[in-house]
Image 1 (tube, helix red, strand yellow):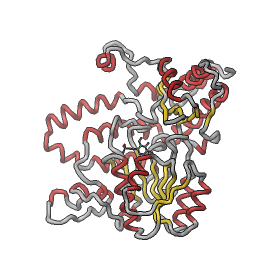
Image 2 (cartoon, rainbow, N blue to C red):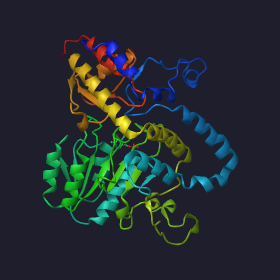
Image 3 (cartoon, rainbow, N blue to C red):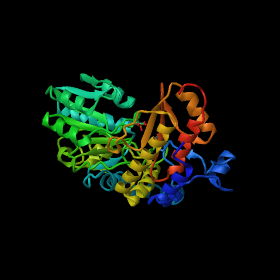
Image 4 (cartoon, helix red, strand yellow):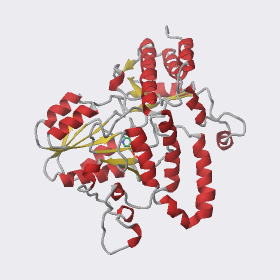
Length: 408
Ligand SMILES: Cc1ncc(COP(=O)(O)O)c(C=O)c1O
């Protein structure tokens, strides 16, 4: 390959975010928890390229969770709720305001992305009692499955339908809700969120974005773009941990009129009034339902703090630069890159199409390059900007280029 390891090393040396890598647990040192648990430890030299699926563990989270367990749960016991009750909105604002560009009071963290998607989709359709739901066939399965369970016609655009096709489809005038992934979990294509949001509003529709593959990787500017509704995972680029609670965002201007279907006590005006009938909170907390996972929220808070401190603009710049570098390396390796070449049209992962995706991904793992497969033929390389090195990207393409199978 003409792009050399020295090129990658040079880029790592001048990476303004390089120091953030040391904030994440990577294992490999004697006595560390990973070695203790797995009897081997992960190798610091491993190229972990799955941060778009499950982000790394921050050191701060290890400390915070031990503290939260021993001091908060162990000692405060039930009195901990004096502090814990507000955690969904505190962590919500950390993510919403500092990372997604929302206004204070528009974002909460609770439940899974699936459940939050259900709540907001039902809320939107109650507010638009007539009209269809517009989405595309490559939207994440859980979103499509939730929509299939709602009693509303779905207009399904082709997989990876271009933005223009979405905007054209909105001209029919009978769309109640358009819901799409901002960045595609497969191809890594980034949709034109400002243009589609504007077109949806012009057509009288509401828009619900799934930000799972963009939150913490690129800037979103929810308020500037006048987005109605959004949901997303915190265990990917926000490094909240496996199964960590998700965020949901509702623009302030909609919060009064929008209702949600899971009317639990945490969404009530006064949780402890325990009255006979549900009265929703007059704020974003009305989109909560049951008791939030406090340990999960604590982990999300630590992960999101690192992202907020690094700054989403700097993170987006690194995402653009490292994905550009990987695409260049993959081109040289003869791979079939399906992710757009324009950095403004992608997130922080790069996908290639390969008929031998599964075998190839296993062979990469054997050489300490951890990527993943989305059936039948996509290999994804997630380049989470806070801890992925240019040398990791280079090595992925280099190992790929050494595989001999006659398929390229
Ligand atoms: C785009 C997208 N939406 C939703 C989900 C599912 O989220 P959850 O399982 O937390 O409900 C995922 C999971 O990877 C995803 O990638």
